[in-house]
Amino acid sequence: MSHPRKLLQILYIEDSDEIRSLVRRLLSPNYVVLEATDPLDGLQLAEETHPNLILVDHSLPHMTGSEAATRLHKLLPTTPIVIISADLSNGARERALAAGAVGFITKPIDADFVEQVESYLNGRVEILEDAEKHLQAYQQELVERLEGNVRQLSATVEKNKHLLQQNERMFLMLERRHKLLETAARVGQMVTSILDMDELLKHTVNIICSEFNFYYSGIFLISEDRKWAALRAGYALAGRKMMAENYRLPVDEKSMIGNSIIHQQAKIALDVAGEISRFKNPFLPDTRSEMALPLIVKSEALGALTVQSDQLNAFSEDDVTSLQAMADQIAIAINNAQLMFKLEDATSELVRTKTFEAIATATGEAIHWVGNKAAPIPGSVKRVREDLTYILALAAQLSGDDTKNENLLAAVETIKEESEAKGLDLEQIRAEMSAMKKNRLQALVSVESMLEDLDIAENSAVTILSIKEGLIGPARKRTDASVSLREMITDTVAGMGLPDGVVQMEWADDMPNAFVDARQVEQVFNNLIKNAWEAMYKTLNPQIYVKGGRDSSNPNFVLVTVKDNGPGIPQEIQEKIWVSFFTTKGGSGGTGLGLSSVMQIVNQHGGSISLASEVGQGAVFSVRLPVEK
Image (cartoon, rainbow, N blue to C red):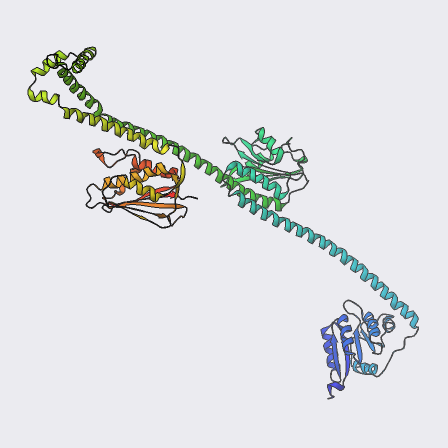
């Protein structure tokens, strides 16, 4: 076999794999066969390799073999080019030679093929007679083919232009759909966070028109009797005018709103001029397209959303899908707002009821409590009056013979005159006293008994006045200022007269001042410490621990705890201790207003108070008050 570097190179341009394989099998024993499946690739390969012979099939993609031969001849003018073709029509061979080929081999390829290739390699050139005529025929073929290519290219351009327009429309449609879905999701997310009904509806119509660039949008809600769809929000000036006139539509088939509510389906009018079931709204004269979307929650229509455009055919199926999804979100938001309104209304009614109950209970307890405290007063006063009558009778018995003191005698005369004026018969009273036994008479004129009755009346009056202070004190106008609770509580304890060492105090170094009314907050800690002390009347070695500092759970508050080692407060009454007039002291004193007023004062300052207690382990009251800003 010859050395590859000494073999001649033949380039074969053919798009058929089978024919290339055949030619390769025939020529490769004696030649280096280069192959290309496309004329453009063949041109590039020929320029790179400069083969000794180029074989070109006549039927190739993109250009004919003759066209390829013309371009190859210009590229490599000394390289022989042979056309291989199955075209046996008249003039096919001549046009191939006119295109620049030196030979023409017909298909199918037979046993003479190798000899024919060798002859062309050895310089064979077929003679073209009447070359000018055949050259003109070839050029005419090129012109016709070029015109065909131009027509085909023009058709392709038009087709591509049409496809481009379709793609642009599709892109715009997809972009619009994406924007609709994105905006609907954003609108749904925004409106579901609004629980105030009026704000929700107004916000919704404004967003719809601004985001979707619609002419008008409005929301109708069904009345309680479900006979009317009342406009609850409308866009711009037209919406405000309709709202001012309490605009509403009957829920029937005569309007798109009523129709969509009844059938719970979207209703669309792409040209409102031809829509029978559309109400002609004088406030919206420029409407050309309209869509009514039902607002549905759990298969129940709450109302409908109207969306209107000043353009014909303004709504597509994508618009319906996207806007209905948004309408569903709006319906949920409206339902939530309605539920919240009902809940608030029910809560307000419950609070009113409970408030009236509490007032009635507190008033009844107050009357009962005051009655109990006032009950001893009439009896004590009656006894003092009786005792005073007897003393007056004794005093009036003094006469001029008994004393020479003129002032005393004048006083006696005054007693007699005023007693007679009040209808008191002092002589008769003295006669009754004379008939009494000694011990009975001594009891009647007992100074100790009289003073005891006066003490009873005085204590009852003081207690009643303390009730007034407990009830009215927290309601007084506050004058908040920066207050050092450490100094205030220390001074309060010092003024309470408690035994030394009973109250132990601990203060954090960074304890901030509180911003409170000093007088009212002083009452808070006075009551808490006083209650703790009174609760430990049976406790050996009673101790009260007061501790203060910044609240670790919320640095905006200062925390003060009042802890005792007393008997503790049973779980079953821990909620009751905050109620007015509730007391665990029974008849030993206490108005039952101390802790009630404490809670009111603390709450009015924006703070909080809590209790932690177990029976036998004392009680801890924790007071949180706002710090100075």
